[in-house]
Image 1 (tube, rainbow, N blue to C red):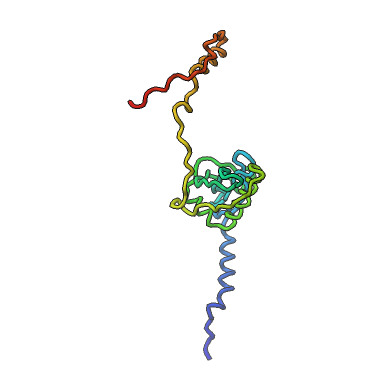
Image 2: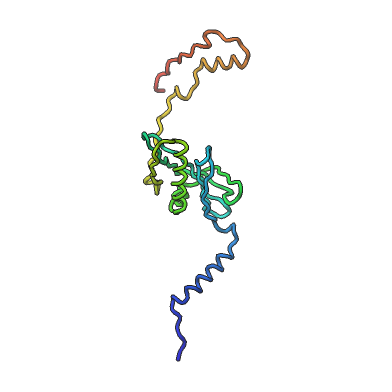
Length: 194
């Protein structure tokens, strides 16, 4: 009589125990905690932190509601997240910009998508009360992402009225104002071209 040969299914518990032992040998700073939590940008609920790298670093996704359609509030996606640091600590911060690839990779995780939906629903409830929330999922890649086109600013939007600037200068210097200082008619627009 020979020895009984082990089947692959008999070895599964052994491999599982070995994986647990090896996983327990890693130091905490060698793997990501995978935390997903709200992190304020300007107002409560307008950001979501995703820890996706060792040491508590990751991305800070900025959330903006789109209220251009009457009666509806839905997400306006920005695939350029900020770099998160200290995400596993008590005071996480964000600065700079993380690559878009990290944004799209984070969206492939179910807990991140669920947290984004819940956070956007709360943000719409606070910023646009009375409007119906409409979930529109984030873009899966740059090929699908359509940026929101903003109107271009013209010269008159960028420059202050010279009369208002002169009036402010006089007020700061203590020089008495004249009636001409209150005439805020705009000077004629310079001709186009070189």
